[in-house]
Image (cartoon, rainbow, N blue to C red; front, side, top):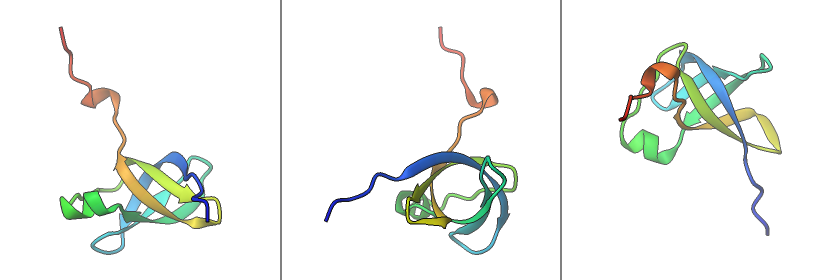
Length: 81
């Protein structure tokens, strides 16, 4: 059985629903339930509303997503010389 490649996108956290469950908004305006990935849950990552995150979704279910990482913003970039 072949593994499908996940659909990746960037979303915005709307609210926290549980210890590893969040509601996120996709760029097209759709709201999905987003779960922390295993590595993020092991490091006790927390997100607050308006945080931007990388989401992974299967092509079979567009109502759930996995939070893969925090999305970088321009303010996060460090200046290296």
